[in-house]
Length: 594
Ligand SMILES: Cc1cc2nc3c(=O)[nH]c(=O)nc-3n(C[C@H](O)[C@H](O)[C@H](O)COP(=O)(O)OP(=O)(O)OC[C@H]3O[C@@H](n4cnc5c(N)ncnc54)[C@H](O)[C@@H]3O)c2cc1C
Image (tube, rainbow, N blue to C red; front, top):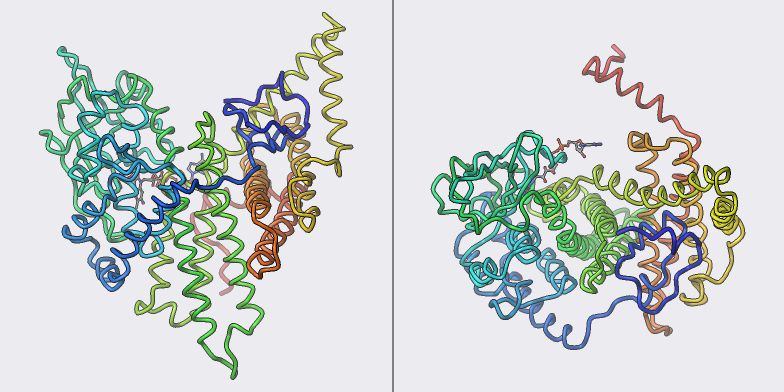
């Protein structure tokens, strides 16, 4: 979806009660628009959903709470026992998002993300065993499967009789997923023969249902998606990988040697496999985000208890400012990540057609926040944190994967910035054609140009107008103004960058990263403001502290955004690139003192 330039070449805040399901609020930020109806009111679970979810969360806790010693042992052993996986099946963990008519629980995206949050409070590998199944393994079947395919597989997937895995990555194809070499050639009977090898497949060793991506014509040709059953002749899985973290989760190669796939196992349209893979990953990102939030909540609980109990210099270390700072930052991060993930789940559940940038934002923010939380909670526990007797080191190892799989932070930042700028570029194109047209069709040309000029003038003059500040409690008005101001600054900077670099902006990765970081702060910050605005004001400490979280986030975001925007124009990017090239040439650090 794109922001419609004809409709949106103004920068007024959109206030329609029902937001346009084709509109991406994050992309609109690049054009200077805060689409208010996409952020307010903050989404809430219905009473019915709360009741259902409450039961699921309780049963997750009951099943996992007495197994913490086992999780530690399974981490060392590098696998979960079959009896445990059977327990997950009996609990219904493989049917969370499968519709009830196929034997699942039929949770919404928000509900599912909340369940992953709960299980991740206990153990990350557990979350991955059933999370990879739902988030990516069989999501393609749910989104793109035919009725016959759903009829054939969904009930077996819901019961966990079949566990699903997502097979995209290959040894030569990681971030550049479009470069896969696995090949499916069409047979005379309409079926396919599959050859190739996928690596690092989550649940590879325990799955029975693989969503496999393969090239279906020439080497440079189109990719298609297939359902492949484990017991098909020619399907093999490798040994379990020995990993840094999430060690108890199965990760293996999955290879295909002349595997015969029936025609009816093509998933979605032939040649649309890349789009299908990206849709699955976009849709699944709130699962990973929910898991990260759950992990952060555990870090906060562990580290705050540790800080209160540990005494040094005759005092509890919780009394020291630097320890308080770490806890406060973890709490702000957690609240912010939770708000953004909840917002994105809501877009998905409401039927938004383009939430890819928002999903990427929530994944980048939540996964990096979780890594910070794991690192800082270990620092609070210090020496104890380093010991395997305590859970901190495992949390650090387990969280490290979050910025790597399902899209690295680098790739997602580039995606966020380029997708947003593409829409802003459409507006700029309009300016260009308007200028060209002045000579051929002066009236039309000037008309368009004055619209654009109007937009730019609004950039300069609309600060302080009543836009979103009417939506937040009085005490957060200054914070709302921060997001109004920096939305306009982002649009202005996007103009500058696109004018300066044109299409070569694609190669300006330092600038793209800064633009992505600004829009991440804007989107996450607006989600936080919306969430706090939905709380009932009272004198309780909990409410007052929630206001404080919103205030801390917006003021820290303001400083980050300001830094990023200033660095777009004045920076050391070229020197840094040249330094890196010098080192790439040498492949070592050449300045030994001795
Ligand atoms: C434990 C684990 C489980 C996994 N599970 C699955 C699974 O179930 N299914 C599946 O298909 N895959 C899975 N993967 C693979 C995972 O998705 C990839 O590791 C990931 O996409 C990154 O690919 P790569 O590791 O090859 O890194 P590369 O693509 O080689 O990237 C290396 C570095 O370069 C950066 N980089 C790459 N391109 C650019 C660019 N254009 N600009 C700037 N920086 C760039 C990356 O961000 C990264 O920092 C799993 C991986 C692991 C480790």
